[in-house]
Length: 229
Image 1 (cartoon, rainbow, N blue to C red):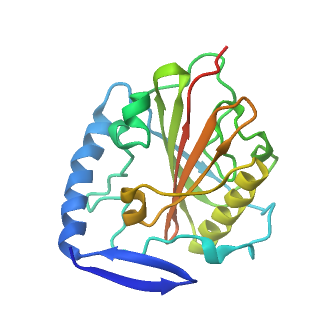
Image 2 (cartoon, rainbow, N blue to C red):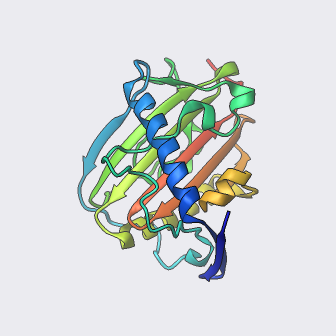
């Protein structure tokens, strides 16, 4: 696979070749249709108003990993939004993810908006009052064995500057919850994602994968099992 390596804001970005992008797009297009058609899949779309940032936008943006492909990796040429299939979520071999319409009864708060993060109350420091910039939000929930939970959120902002500042705000929220930079999988590295991980108050591990393309932001959260009830 032909690759181009560039340096953007001190971050090395690896760009796959055109043939690989086309093949991957076809693969995702097929899977996206399967996700959208699944009876258990809960794809939620919401709209929001203007945002007043809680954190300064001049944070460590240089560490933000940005997808540099010219093709939108989150929407197909047919206009379908590309959500992550359950069998492609991190930890699938361990937690056996399945798409679900809602979280189990008794599960803690969740949100589609940034900078909120952490299923089942795993990152309470991120759930603070906030306005939201113009955006459209899509989300898909998953459950796994031993009460493991996961969520994929795609957020399309009205402007790339809003997407950048929201990722910076998200990073601050994750740091306040004790998460730290972690090693991505080979696929995540190829896609241009950054990964944050840490142990939350109840002893479980929360792992968050963040990826931005222009005014789109993708956030995948995986909360390992076991505490429940």
